[in-house]
Image (cartoon, rainbow, N blue to C red; front, side, top):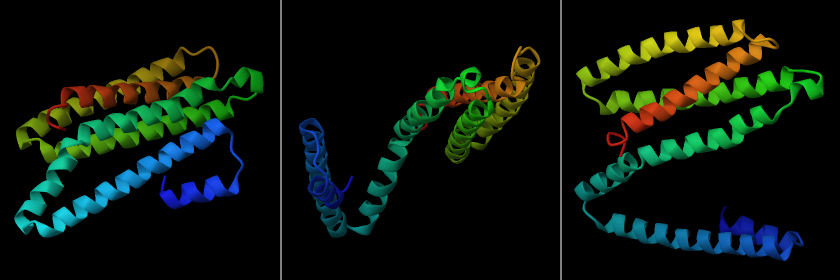
Length: 185
């Protein structure tokens, strides 16, 4: 949240004291981060170019694992929990549930592709070849399991299929992150 938005919100709305305090705290945090960024920018502008290059690439590489874990957590909170919270029987339609699981699956698949792409650039050629072969086998297994889940579902086989895809892809994301934790740091 930027400081200007915080000020506008605080002026525009009458907020409960707890919300007002939280917003004020967020504003202070944003202000201090802006000061840190200004200091870093000033520091970076005064250092020689060779040092600037290493300081810019190292923090990004060191934060990849944490960044991917944060993304995974957000997908779980924003998409998985929403999909499981929908009660299709109660709504008399399974469409919202199917759409929610499909969206969840697409989010996990995008994250998996991002992790895989990063590993492709980080691993040696031989290490990546091994990963690629394992990944291809995993895709076959994921699809087979989704088909099985669909075949044995008593109701809404499409939901069982999509839910299985999302769950398998989520597990694969976490497995790759743990397996290559040190590589992504």
